[in-house]
Length: 324
Image (cartoon, rainbow, N blue to C red; front, side, top):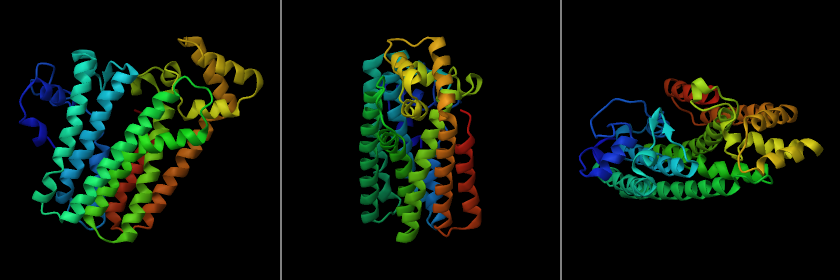
C-alpha cells in the first residue's frame, strides 16, 4: 500500500504520509496507531472468498483505503476535530488550506493506484468495471457527506433521510470495497450479488454502531466524551429517532436545545434522558442487529468456504460490538 506514496517527494506527500501514520510531523518514519484497515481487508477477503487471487485485488484495496483517508482529512476540517487516532489532525498542524489540498491530492493518488490493475494481469473489462465502481462510490460518499453537514442543527430530519444519508456517506465505500473484491475474484453473478447485499448491510452496521458510540460510548475507549455527537448537534440515528418519537414538552425541549449556538453539559444530560424515554438506544441496537443478520444471511447465500466464511463472520461480529 505504501508504494504509491512512499517514494513521492515534497512536503505535500510528507503530509499524506503523516496522515497515513507512517511518519511524524518531521517526516521521520514511525509506527503509530492508524485506522482499522476495514475496507482494504474486505476487498481482499471478498476476492479470496469467491475463489479469486487476492493479489489481483491489491490495487483496488489500496485505492479504497486512500479514498477513505482522503475523506477523513476533509471530515476533520468540517468537524473541527483536532485529534484522530491519538495524533493531531492534518489541518490542526498545517492549516485548513494545505489540508484541503492534501486531501484532494490523496484522492488523485487513489485513482493513480488503479493504474496497477493491468500490471497485475487483470482483464481490461474487469479493470474498467473496478474504476467505475470506485468513482461511483466516492461520488456517493461525497454526496452523503454534504447531506450530513446540511442536516446538522436541523430538528426535522426524518429517519428515511438519515438512512439514505448513511447509505451514501459510509455505506458507499464499504459496498465498493466488497464489490471490487467480488468482481475481480469471480464472474459468478449469484456470488457477486450476494456480496453486494452483504456490503450494503455492513455499511449500515458500521455507521449505526458509530452513531451509538458517538452518543453513549465511553470516553476512555472512544477518546471522545459521552454525548459528543449531541454537543456537535449531529443528526445521528439516536437523535433523529428521539425527535421522531418524543412528544409535547420533551419534543419542544429537544428542538430548543438543538437551536442553541452551543450545547452545555446539562443539555447533553437532558437529551440523553429524553432518548432514554423514547427508547432510542433500544431502537438503534435492534436496527444494528437487524442489518448484522442481513449481512450474515447474504454470506450464507454466497456459498463460500467455511474458513473464509468464519473470517468474514468475525468482521461482522466485531463491527456489531466494537467500542471505538
